[in-house]
Image (cartoon, rainbow, N blue to C red; front, side, top):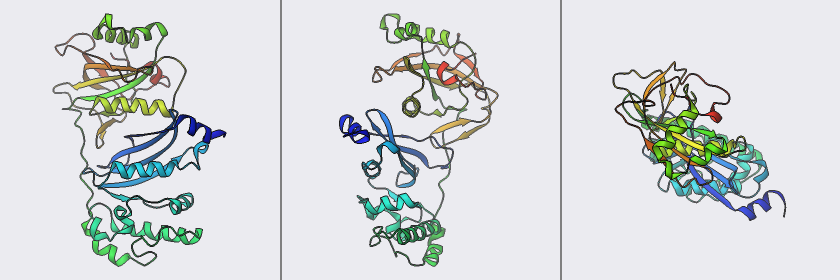
Length: 342
């Protein structure tokens, strides 16, 4: 065998359910099922998840050209159903390729697909008028492509549904958008670093102590700005996941890579700059500066990512504790050189 088949059989497939940082969604959280073959990105499935976890909106599914025709799309969709075993699923509007794939796909829980059930059951989560339009669009493409499209499972396949949709539309309510408060909560952000080999060898050296190694990293980074495009998360785990996600999609230059995260505390009485609050993270928009207290650092090497090193900083003051972070400034190589605190 050659090409994708050989790579699949030799390396196997792994799936990773992670955050999907996207500007849309409102109170719905972005989530991504990522397929990796030998550690290389082979495809992904993007969805929005309702705050109560009982509804999922499919945003898109994509398989890289070298891995198509191997069932990866079906594997990712099965994983989505398994990850949300009681949630309503809305697959939305399909295109031509999606129509042909859906005809071959065997849905593990068709009774949880909103296209297969009356709006009285799920209208609190999805707009019945929108779903009716999606259903009509998909029925048209099924007929145009000459495929079955599992029509026996679809609720009132091909029939006009505008009147019923209007009757149940008042049940639909968008959840209230909420998220972390940067003026009151600690946040976590991160950056990928490509370090000189000599400095990289110090990262796991326990004899220096975590605090000493953290200070060495800070001296190397210097003073300046953090990347303005970073997502600031409510957990350290999410910050590390962002960095690994970036590493998979954009491996970057060869060399010893370090994933570094910061734990930031708001300064008492300081007004947060302009920002957008998402379901589980914060994004700063063209901010002239963010007053924070650097409370700690954690880091992982790509060679041994299962080991996390970290150090806390003295909250009473001292160099590196209080930092004005101009999130609106950014340089092309910032993700390689790291954040610069002043």
